[in-house]
Image (tube, rainbow, N blue to C red):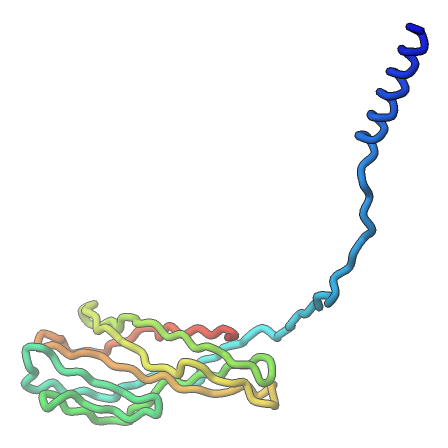
Length: 174
């Protein structure tokens, strides 16, 4: 009887072990609506400066203590302060051309820079004015042109001389 009881216990142990050791296997399930893949390929942008910005000649007069602002629109129209300055010459806004992929919107970034006097090293702060975006035309290879204007502030202590410096403009796809 002891032998029979041992066989029954052994059989029960094997049966319970086999129930525990066998995991439940579920059938594979796919998504009801599968995801799609997408890749947008664009040409690298090429930015070229085609014309330099020129405020023309600014003649100093009696300048207010707070200074006078000389501003140029993107179209190249100059406003010469509020009376203490005289502007003359042939002003021109800076011009750029950007080439890239057709029908894409391109962001334009222009940041302030310094214009330095060649005579004494003094500087004027240049604040650019550029379009926020341009759209690439259908033709693609010709690219699209845009202009950059901006402003400078003339103070009573501003020295005479030619001020020049780089206009920092970059572009990127939107």
